[in-house]
Length: 368
Image (cartoon, rainbow, N blue to C red; front, side, top):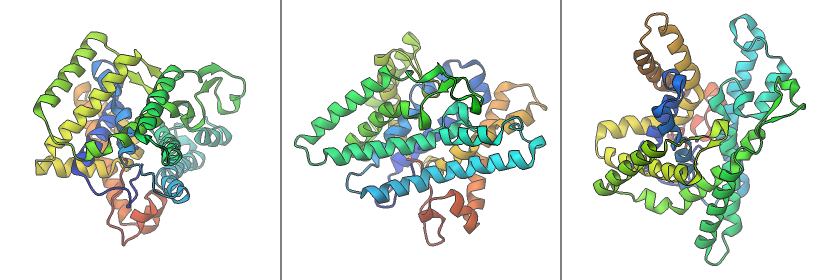
């Protein structure tokens, strides 16, 4: 989920809406009601929602940006909020141990986990995505620069993308939950993937390169009822017949062919729905706003949704009602935090990219 630098692409309503739908699916996928039984809704969401974000990030990749500024802009957009949020959370744990669920975690274990940056090593697990997206963006940009001068470059990129995808799927769990005696200082006895989820980089880079290759088609996309209906039907049939899904957090990838086709169909369905919804002002404005604020929703939805579910569970035991209310909180409360942050210059510098934190900037933070 990257922040789209000002020079990369003009605004595109369809992609903004797709990003908004994607981040809402992320929040829904982390909803306690959905996670409790990991039923069909969970499997449907997880079969494509993270590939969607990698793909959309690739749509905005450019091979003309200088390497140094590109890396710095990605670090500012992705790594800065990751470290600020988790280090502040750790400071709260040390200063107010009785009020923190992390009270039993030593400072060394906590800081080491933040630096390692995979799901089992950090307190707010969805934030693993930020350092990993930084890595995947840098790798993908490097591939684009290396291949820029090649003849038949598109063919080379297609072959490279397919090779990365195949290798990424084949080796997806090679570094997951392996017995190790070297991480006891973090309170772990099994390897939680590679640092910054480098073991997923082949797969995520392939998704980003696919987005780059299809960027012109995506930005020019128009709604087609026949193609949209066919994609939904094929997606439903595959889920109904094979019941396969993906869980990158746990390095799980079902049948390679089925899961890959499902992910591609899911991405197309979201893009098709976005092309349709952009015709209607109400949907265009609300979903585009959610998409432009997707970084903040990613940062804070986990705590907002979880706390809301916990508080409301003392009032009602209706899990569907609790799930709906906590989903709304997981989307809306981060938006409130974002608007407050925009009005506090020094606080904004800590969490927003510098180009958006400065008062003269009109750009909203985006997770592309």
